Length: 569
Image (cartoon, rainbow, N blue to C red):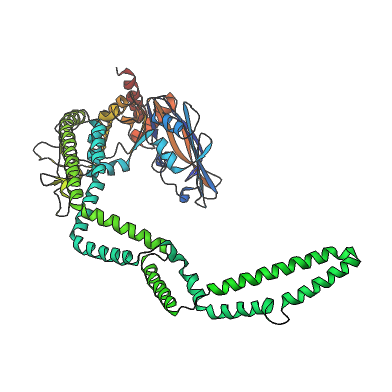
């Protein structure tokens, strides 16, 4: 329930705070005083889009706050807990609007996102104004209202679940049929690719071919270089090994004179042995060098084959092998295509049967709910001075289009996640008229009463604690206004009701009454709100009855109106 709202620097409101109570709260005042601005602020606090253009001229920011009481079973309590907020029986929403359009949201003092705000406030309050009139004129909304009245969310959820489950199955079957259509061509293409890769007989040694080809192409250079090195080290006259031997012998003799040269002599001896070993290894390497033009040509041909496969199938030999495995898997799938189609069709038939069953059950419950709603609406409208009104609900169905999948059809009609039908509210406000769609014939006053009747009927199924009525008196007056006021008062026995009205016949039923007016100070216009005491309420009621020129007669009439309310049972 809404306990308090604070508005600062918003439109023509500079600083305003309103504390609400249970029951029916009336907001009245001259046109343009700022009543609807308060509703706009509440809408923004409940998650509507904020516009920097609403910030009061001269201010950088506008600040809006609302404090709600939360019963323990409120959905908002559960969502707050899921979002990591501490358990509390109060909810403080704060929105700061900036001229830079960088607006901020705070929930119980913590910065929050619009997504979280909308989730928490979804069932806090319902505002019935021009938007609600437009909603009632949109026929797709009628089905939502009927389902809410009939408490059909569970059955509707079952239909939606079946509908969502069948969608991927339909796509899968379509894909299988498409693959079957080009099956022969696809098998031919895959088989050609498979044969091409398999014929190459790729093996691990293929990765070494580039290195082998490099050696084959440089065999002569290698042979010449290594051979000359062996000659220099060991074979030719004056070879390095011979010269080193002479040096070693000289140092060994010197070491006999000076033992300090012994270590050097040992190093020279080791070097001599190492050079002999290197020369032997080089001789052996010369024997391995292959001068084989045939092998060179074969390796070049093999590398060309592998490079062609790599260019076509992935860039590396590993990728080519992986592609071959994928081809084999696809060919196996293609061979089993008919079996998969049969299996998928059987699953789809079963899913379609469940979808039809759930949709028919939902349709039957909607018919029953429509009969009850029609009876209740006619009763409520009779109490709202529409005594001869007939109200009913029709259920047009959508014919399936040629491209609608057969598993989303039943008896020639399309099945959606809403079921097999739509709902249209039909009304005949006057005797002798035929039933016609509500959106085609209802006047503003009739729409206001239809909305009020629906609110009264849905009071037990609508989860909102606070109901706000703006323009509920559109197009009505006199005795009708009196019965509307009584209906609002009755609704306030179950919900907190806030009502903006210009009619004294409605305002008289309020348990508290605020007057909203504009004042000019220091060259600026600002909205002010006053909670009326008994005497002030008489004056405001008299103004609503007679305009600005309040006479003793209008004042007496106001006192009579307010006094009669006190006497009502």
